[in-house]
Image 1 (spheres, rainbow, N blue to C red):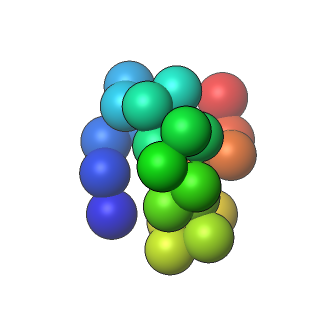
Image 2 (cartoon, rainbow, N blue to C red; image 1 turned 180 degrees about the vertical axis):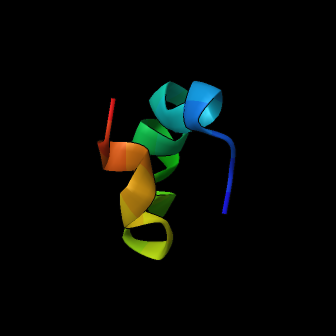
Length: 25
């Protein structure tokens, strides 16, 4: 999955489903 710092960008890509860990702070 992507890095936690990229969670904001991932939010737009909606790839969080592939990496639920990004939902954490």
